Image (tube, rainbow, N blue to C red; front, side, top):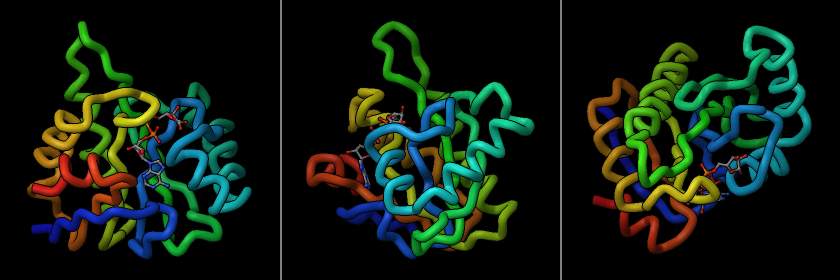
Amino acid sequence: MATIEHVLGDITEQDTDAIVNAANSSLLGGGGVDGAIHRKGGPEILDACRKLRAGHHGGGLKTGQAVATTAGRLKATWVIHTVGPVWSATEDRSQLLADCHHNALKVAKDLGARSIAFPAISTGIYRWPVEDAARIARAATENADIELIRFVLFDEKTLAAYRP
Ligand code: APR
């Protein structure tokens, strides 16, 4: 049964074994969390992502899926990249957002990671309403088989939504 923490902060500063990147399907970087992780983690991370693209992730990472790379210069050992769903008012993509959490936790377990930090996946550029994303994230992580899950929120509003 995981200990679950909610902190206000920068996910690139976290010393958990793994940190989760809110990536896009290209795995070749972007803004927000993705931009911060690549900027601070250094080129090793992008090199590893490029190798994934050259290998069995040739077509890019599908929404809801997760894959790990080195964390480069970051304190964490691994970055687990996952692609959140873009918010849609007409299509219920909730299962895909839950899958991001389930699959990131599965990758973490396969790696032997004992702690993992999650950002508020899909609530930035992908415009998912924060309250709903928090509900999905909570449900998807409540019985996780890992020692520590830390939600790292970037502003007070998101922290208030994610903190039970
Ligand atoms: N640490 C923690 N949280 C952060 C950080 C950071 N350094 N930077 C941004 N955030 C927060 C945002 O404020 C938001 O609450 O992470 C949440 C997710 O926002 P985004 O990073 O925009 O991720 P998302 O909404 O999933 O959109 C993914 O954005 O950066 C691109 O390449 C990425 O195309 C992909 C898309």
